[in-house]
Length: 360
Image (cartoon, rainbow, N blue to C red; front, side, top):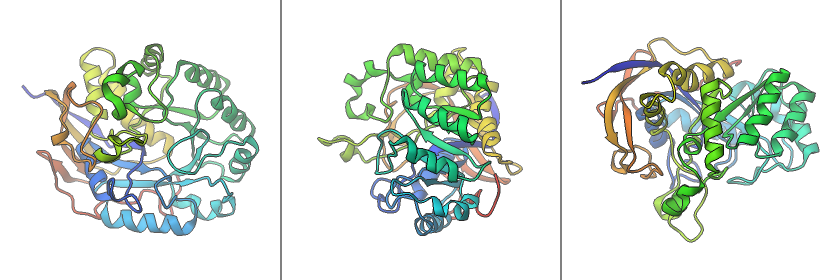
């Protein structure tokens, strides 16, 4: 028997939608369709798909492409460039959801490993605008030094270890303006799953020890963690099965069912899930959801995750074969039903840019 609940205006602040020079992997149309299937109202796209979003021309190109194709609402991150692009920050800050700084190795060429260079980017980014950082292990402490110095709002994406959580817990207790995101693959998978998953378990940061996974769950339960974000990063099956598979896994369509499965198991409350995927992301980025925007979810739906039912263009998931509870039946945006009965009903271009000439 169906048990329908409403989850208001879900927002994923960490996705890699591809398209542009990587349209063979996925497109803005296909991946925003996957977002609707996952119950999301809006997604934020990272800057490391080529051409990297590190100058106004690249930003304008991505804005135009998303405006033409997206079926859910969206925002774009601007990337901190190795060569230094700080002179453009004042001009673009009002058009984007934040600045992304890659401080550890990841996909693309945006790594900024030198602390002095990071400081230049922190100093130049306008106060009040979010900085999202990829920081692992002791690099978290390096970034916290900059947060302490510049007092810029900083969101730590895909935190994956107990030690990183300890650093950030202390930072919050100190009163630093930091927030924490974690990903479903680090909550449900560990390095022990790699022999079975093979390249489908490769992502950045990599899978960790069971003790780290348990620390992430404790952080969710205690309220330390602010956001569950998918880090949706599709690659083709051929690429993942090649001799040099790229890092990254899709996640837009599996994040909510995985969290709702945790609700059924008594690990989280439904109210906490709503905080993690809807209320907190909107609060952190200062976004007010439009009226009549929500996902209608059947908490009693019991099913096995299958690649054939996915809308993402990559057509696979590291969670294939996992039994979950909770299915998105409908997604509504601004009073319009945009997803129902496993079908995307919105036309390309329906999605709106949440940050163009706005202040978050």
